[in-house]
Amino acid sequence: GENVEQHPSTLSVQEGDSAVIKCTYSDSASNYFPWYKQELGKRPQLIIDIRSNVGEKKDQRIAVTLNKTAKHFSLHITETQPEDSAVYFCAASIGVGDMRFGAGTRLTVKP
Amino acid sequence: GAVVSQHPSWVICKSGTSVKIECRSLDFQATTMFWYRQFPKQSLMLMATSNEGSKATYEQGVEKDKFLINHASLTLSTLTVTSAHPEDSSFYICSARDTAGTAGETQYFGPGTRLLVL
Image (tube, rainbow over all chains, first blue to last red; front, top):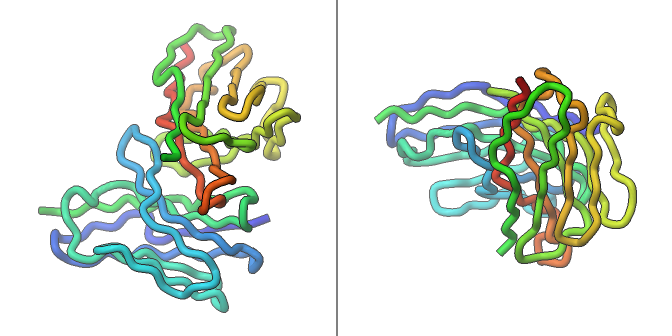
């Protein structure tokens, strides 16, 4: 089955700096890659997603890149703000099949 | 759109009792819902896939007789933790896909249920 690995497990940046979180997946058939943000005690919220027919997608300060050949995808957050502090999860699925999550990255943005 | 609710948000129960958690899709129909378990500072672990009108599909290592899932309608799935024990204490989160929408792969999560078994 699909295996998703995520790095780093913790990330601390200064406000205004960029943050990058990387994930790799094992099943080349995976074609949907969402990123979720989870604040303490709350539900995971979808922040951006990408499908395998595109290599990059951007939404304001957030961008995701996908390298199908290498089977990895990354989340980029620019101009980080304290409210970006949370746990971020990457995931992968084959269409509407089961979704597998990475282990999560705890991002801390220091003011 | 794509709102998922979950009830209760918090439950404390005695060891040996059963607890039922409800997951509802409020503004869309979900033929498939998913149940996850999340321990503190850990990732989301898929427990089972709930299919409307048929039996749930359980992940390896998840006891189907302990975690009963019923998906009786297109907007409601329930998870019953039977004979709960302290090791069942966890954060249980459901999710659903709006397969009729334009982004059918996207999972939308409920707010979660924190279960504490004494």
